[in-house]
Image 1 (cartoon, rainbow, N blue to C red):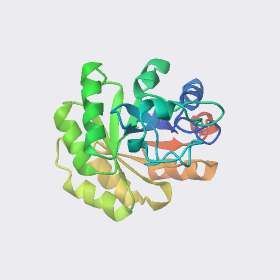
Image 2 (image 1 turned 60 degrees about the vertical axis):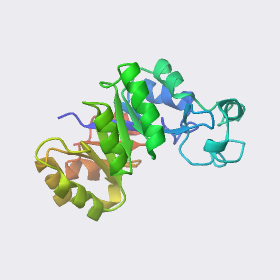
Image 3 (image 1 turned 30 degrees about the vertical axis):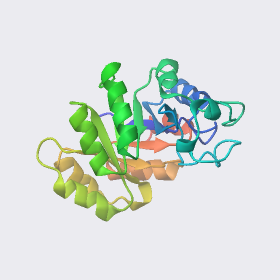
Image 4 (image 1 turned 90 degrees about the horizontal axis):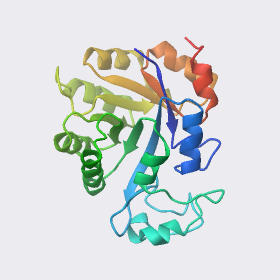
Length: 231
């Protein structure tokens, strides 16, 4: 199976995170996929922002949910970049996308778009909420899903609940420092993939390979080229 290297919010180690500039650089760097985050604006538009508020990543302030698209578009997201609308991302890059959502309203809007634009083969829906993923999988038959978990215990619980066929999450993503070989083996035995994040050094990449992970999420484009020669 191919070892995947996924660009974290584009390549946020060298470009402003969750911007078209960052996504385009990730694609040019040869990333196998791009991980990004979606939230709904006040007027119901899917925009690429990680935090509930815009304070950290833009020159503005306030909750994404309290700002209209026009207000969000007026903000500087770094180096003159604007907060992208998800459909702009779809048109700007051709890479597979791992799209993270954290609530049912956002997941529902994403599900509608995936169906309308026939994106099942291109978009993987990710979340920290297993119920959100289960609902997305129900609404979009055949869509790939990824569950982000914070601890090894949570990962083991997910694996133990996974039926022989058709788990709510096809991939489990976990902090690279919290992954044990036994958990990886159990995930694979249950038909699940396991990936590590954020893998930003050669030592972390070697650890990911040694654990038998299916891929990593990284902030830096150099990890992609290094990963080709690291076994």
